[in-house]
Length: 530
Ligand SMILES: [Zn+2]
Image (cartoon, rainbow, N blue to C red):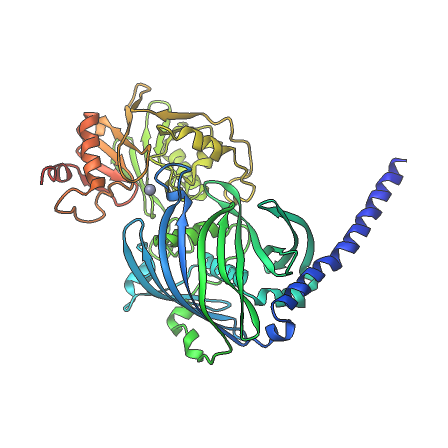
């Protein structure tokens, strides 16, 4: 009886698959038809577009979980050559955050190399700094991410799907905004796109990947295609909105498009020295797509094969002892502070990723054997300083956050993270979280550590650290000590530091930073009243 049931179930499954397969293919051929037909798509040799883009970053908000930060608006001219699988994009990006500035640069992407001419980030690599005029090769992860996003948004994706029916699989309907869309999955390289179709027109409406986000864990990332217009016999989606877990983070408008305009091969030429030095596209489950894509939103992406540091400049993160029992974790784009107490350690900030945290935890274990990290103090909720919190929680650390941020981090730690390649999935919901309302003293009999809430314009609930025995403060983003000369007058962020130190009644001699290095506090305090 049992066996018969199993057999019946198996045969039903076979029937279901057999009937689903052609349905998936039918969705693809209907979409291709709606886009102008297979011949029209196959006739595309070059595609030239002009457009505008705006981007928002949810995890740089002022309030944790609050309104997304407007990051930049841009204009672009892009040209793709189908035969050589090459694309060139000329960008002018006007950033609003973290500071107003404009980057004008060109990206060239081929099947096995990526190149950037000009400056596209404040996080410049050694290769970019050493090149005159400034230029650099794309990291393996950026090349993979750029190739993936070009493919996601390309009309030719559907011609590929039509030509590779063995890689198309029917999927269950996907409901978005109360509407159930028929869908297929398409495997290409190591990517799987879930493509949703409009039931009425047959056109594709959404192309989804399942990504990992260092704050929200497993997330969906979609391009939403709309405003279809006919361009030289092809239907082209002239509005592309990108949604992260359903929240719009990019809006692109195509303002001009042309099929088969002549393009010279030079447009895609990568100088030989850069081509030879270029990384191949990264593959596998560990590509941090969301990190690569979204750090570019705010113009701070470090284009390195190792996301945490410039792999062409240094070989590792490292510890610098600032005082007995106090280590600054430096060498990368983002720093932490480790403070040794009698029985355990306190760490400030968990930047970038759990890979980064695992390095810090390993270095801390080697330096202070037998002393676990009891507290991880997050100065604020931004993804670049908090995205490695899970590795600490997994070791049993208590997470310390500023006033009002506890509920946010409870939600973060409850989010599934099966696609985190640096930490296997586990239940972190029982992690203890402490909110610092005003001041918190961590004392276990040896080397007291303080955390103070700081009123500031950067992030609500931001904390600064203080080690009285060393007269050393720790501060992230509001001031980057040693990163450059101080201004002539206090700006609102620096004024907040001076006011906060006064209010706390502490007497720091130096501050170490989440960015920058270490600097004396007196020259900053002396700017008050100027
Ligand atoms: Zn920040």
